[in-house]
Image (tube, rainbow over all chains, first blue to last red; front, side, top):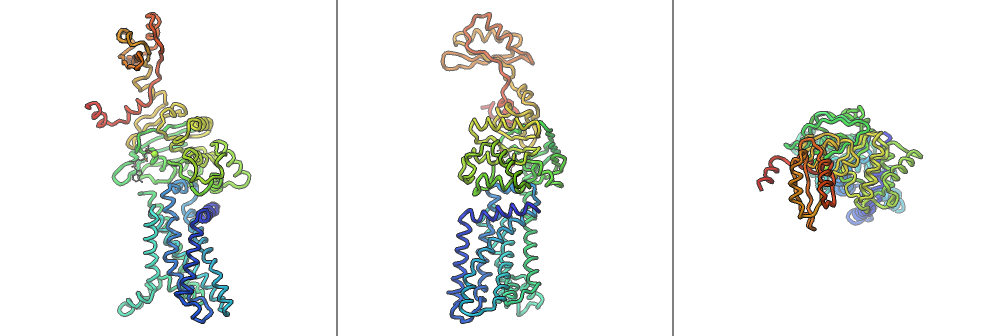
Length: 245
Length: 320
Ligand SMILES: Nc1ncnc2c1ncn2[C@@H]1O[C@H](COP(=O)(O)OP(=O)(O)OP(=O)(O)O)[C@@H](O)[C@H]1O
Ligand SMILES: [Mg+2]
């Protein structure tokens, strides 16, 4: 659709028209650095790879991505521009996809700006750059998943704070369902199928598979399916609000 | 060009729009009137496809807004209530964005932008963020956005709210100039606007159409329609009032003190009579010191009040 591009462009430019983008990027980079170097003991590990760095991504995204997503629709609803946007001759799906892509591209930029850390490991040793590239791709896909969830939830309210809190909770569920604590809890008594199903919903399961260095098509499909699913939820939510309000 | 059939919108138990039927043809400027909360904006939101109706049907230029939404929306220019716009953009960026989404680019886009900017006098603020604009300029940005693609149908929710008198005048002139080629619906609380630009006035109240006619037809329902008012010294007032009352075309006379030693007498017509001739004859023959004499066309505010004040409210007022 020809309208995807102008909407994408406007949305994307909005990040940089306000301090939001800069604040977000600074916090993002600072948090990534702090976790990796201090908490993760990057230097003491003595191994030249970025697994520690990527290991923290799901937990950082858990808070940072909902912060990006919360304004996506809630802000439009609050200021009334929603009315403007939805009465333009653009199919709803195109509007939803454009806005999502703009936010995703923005998180992509924030992620790309962590490149000094990649330079650092290459300076210190000789890491497997294939694994690192795969991990970056996996991290980007995972950010898209968090973002799609946050966007759909943002469409439900005009209150950004509510959008943020609910998104964090939902994203948390999607993250921890693969964490050892949760899986151990199921392990002893639940049938293996159930344990695997719970784990298969988790970002962690699929992300750690990718960071191991293999981009399995099933993990990629998982993230794209999840994104598509939540974009559909996003569309349905907006459509339902149009009917009921 | 706009057809509304049995349109209903409920918000929970409340029917904001409770069954509206309207047809607006090309060349018409329809003034959409009604008290706060009457359902004007809600109706417009359904006509433009922002809200889905609970029941009923809207077609715009032959396209059903619910089933053929995009085609219908292409033909509409819409100024939503409060003129929302992206505050971090400048008018130039904002209008460019709207133009691009509407499918324009290159020189054609520039032409459209130039025309919309010229028509709404936006030149002085083109590169200032919309958030920092005054209310009137914001409204004009919204208007420019609605006019940009020169649509056959214009839906304007309070387009002159917050504009200064000069701008009001220029927006009204603009609407009048576009009118022959378009179907225009304008909601407003300014009754003089209806007389100035509308070919038709529709009053809605509690979600229903309660009056529909030309401004002249509405004026004819006013108590002051064809009434004659004259200003004269207070000492003559009673005598003249008695004479006026005796005229066959006069039903009653009202006296109002002006406070400067003069009195205003208003003679109301009997039935469809035109008392202005009788009264002016009386004024000439009586050798009176009359400083002012005029016939009224009627008062829309009076008609509006009479139609939209509900029985309960009216009862309270008369008993008080
Ligand atoms: N989203 C909503 N949820 C619930 N009620 C609503 C909603 N939008 C409008 N209403 C109600 O519908 C009724 C009609 O509102 P509407 O905005 O159409 O009035 P209006 O005629 O435009 O009034 P005004 O002259 O004040 O602009 C009001 O009683 C309003 O409270
Ligand atoms: Mg309104």
